Image 1 (cartoon, helix red, strand yellow):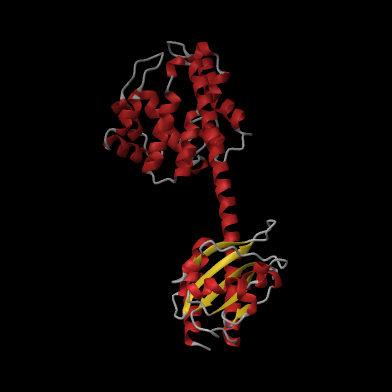
Image 2 (cartoon, one colour; image 1 turned 120 degrees about the vertical axis):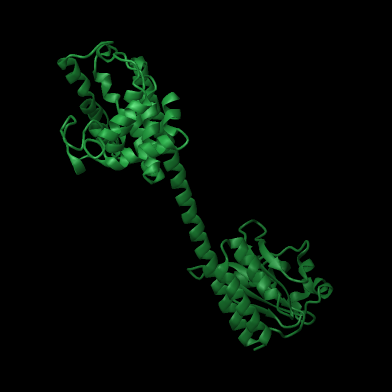
Length: 385
């Protein structure tokens, strides 16, 4: 075996291993082969099923690349150009060797072109897929005659199989990536539609209760910001934001005259208002959200010490999202105007949540809220939005 064949094989295998795409694989393989003297050109072509049974060039490299200018290759056995090495090895699934372009009669149609490119011998080997069907061909050209003996034929034949495996693997990888990207786009589209629907529901509630217009949006923004301070993932922040947008959706079941009453509510009216968490849960519990939004809404008035409603849950019985909403809701409700009282202000709201930290409210959530307040007045900006 010629040393250059081994070197070409080693370089080509390395290129094969590092390729990330079909084009990169083919180009790098051809370059690895044709960079070894006396090889002057390498190319890969695939069999097309058009009327001419043409061979489409997929990639090439070499000092004599001009040989391929305006050339037409076919694998049609009924035409002279279809009986060349490239077309023959595709058609027969067997390697084809031209030991000397000056004497091989089958190579007559390309002899003049070979002389201009200093080509004296070549090999064509079929590239096959997993079921042993030829899908392409690898052609390697040498400036010396008799460059491809039995050992070289075996070497390049085995290497062509490796190319076939590589192309098949990359096609499967590409298909899988396309499937994943399509799934991601579908999920993103669904997520956007879900978010738009929830925002529309939130606006509907605000039209019914103009005194709390913007309340749900501000609670959502505060909750998401707190979640960020707590180190939650983007998905978790999205969940608590969307829950915040509709945390009061159950108020649709509360008479509007009670929601807008400019004085203190009596016990029956308060009981009706408190029923909004159960109503909200019933509205949303069967919606297939990817997050426990219905539970967050159901529990956002629960308190760690059991003093909340509707179920007087305690401690770990309350989900993390509801704990964040509880703090966000308290801050927004106290800091802004209500029909029955003027705004108490952000400082008063923060004092209340600090007094209740670790008692009725989650201390870590409260600490995160204070970090927001002290960092570029983030909470104040949300309250004023």
